[in-house]
Each structure stands twice: as C-alpha cells, then as structure tokens.
Amino acid sequence: MKLDPFYPIFDSADWLERMLPLGVKLVQLRIKDKGEAEIGREIARAKLLCDKAGCDLVINDYWHLAIEEGCDFLHLGQEDLDTADMAAIRSAGLRLGVSSHDEAELERALALAPDYIALGPVYPTILKAMRWDPQGLHRLGEWKRRLGDIPLVGIGGISLERAEGVFEAGADIVAAVTDITLNADPEARLRAWVAATRSHLG
Ligand SMILES: Cc1ncc(COP(=O)(O)OP(=O)(O)O)c(N)n1
Ligand SMILES: Cc1nc(C(=O)O)sc1CCOP(=O)(O)O
Ligand SMILES: [Mg+2]
Image (cartoon, rainbow, N blue to C red; front, side):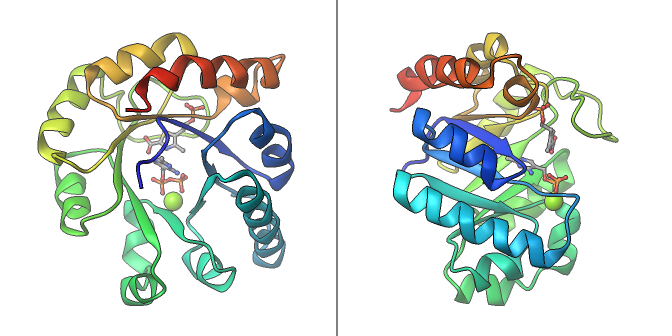
C-alpha cells in the first residue's frame, strides 16, 4: 500500500500519543538513548497507538525487537545492515526502508529491493553529527531516476518551508524531526505539515 508523503520521526511513544491524533499516517520510532527492555516496551506501546490510529509504524535499528513485537516495518541504515539478519527479517514479513548517502550505499540498498530508500542529509541537520555534506536538491532527482518505482524519502534539515522543494526535486516522501520536535508549538507545526503534504498523497 502507498506510504504517506509525510514521515515524522519521534523518539518516544509519548510523542506518538500526542501526534497521531493530528493526522500522522506514517511514523518512525527512533530511540537512541535507552536500554533494550525499555525500547521493547516503547515499541509495544507505539504499535498499539499506531494500530488504533491506522498509521504505518516504522521501527528504527532494532530489527529483533520489531520482530518480537510483531511490527511490520523496519528502517535500517548501512551500519545496521552489517549486523542485521536479513533472512529473519524477511521471514517475519517485515517491510524495509534503507538509508543511503552515496553511490555505493545506493547500490547496496537497491540490491535489497526495499520498500523505500532514504537519501540524506538533504540539508544540514542538527539532530546528529554526519560525515556527509548536504546532498542538495539535485541529488534527489538523480536518486529518483535510479529508484524507479521504489519510493524515495528525503531526510535531513527539512523544514516545512523546504518541503515543497524537496518533493519537486524528486522525493515521494519527506521525513522530519527537529522542525517539529523543537518547534515552540509542535502540535500546530505538525498540523501545518499534514495540511501542506496532502497534495502529494497521489
Ligand atoms: C527515513 C530515515 N532515513 C534515514 C535514517 C538514518 O538511519 P541510520 O543511517 O541508520 O541512522 P540512525 O537513524 O540509526 O541514527 C533514518 N533513521 N530514517
Ligand atoms: C536521522 C537522520 N538520518 C539522516 C540521514 O541523512 O541519513 S539525517 C537525519 C536527521 C533528521 O533530522 P532533522 O529532520 O531534524 O534534520
Ligand atoms: Mg540506524
């Protein structure tokens, strides 16, 4: 089924509880600073919330917990791929999104025939230190030509004001973190994102 064009990323089930009622239909749970037992509980709660809201939930990094909790969508970066058990992931029926930042990573992602491929950072990001310079909008066009029917996710430094340009450059889906979570009024910002991205539902 077609993925929603707006893809916010949050680091707790509490954020999902606040944001899902506002119209989020695709969301990633990306937790970096907790132990596995706690992350398992967060995933279980996020799954309940997403099932209730009819929202696709993507679990970042923790493929074994995603399998244990009966989730159906996973995001893996290139380093995650080094240690992930792809056979277990496939046999659990998990859908897969993969990060890419350069040509070699794109080739590796394409070989997995994933459900989307992300390109980043499109713009400078303050969320985490990255060893890649910003890709720029032109790179999204290159990637889209290479991906064909595989949805392309743009990520990194994308604000609401930049989102339309990211779609125009070739992204099918736009991901955002700090533009929402660091906004003085995250609910209002998220509502504005939902409204602004409806025209890309397709
Ligand atoms: C949609 C999306 N794109 C890229 C990433 C980054 O994944 P990764 O490179 O594994 O880095 P971490 O997010 O794990 O720090 C993502 N999470 N989501
Ligand atoms: C988690 C992540 N991955 C990226 C990549 O390029 O792979 S950029 C990024 C951070 C996205 O956060 P923000 O929208 O606040 O810039
Ligand atoms: Mg990762």
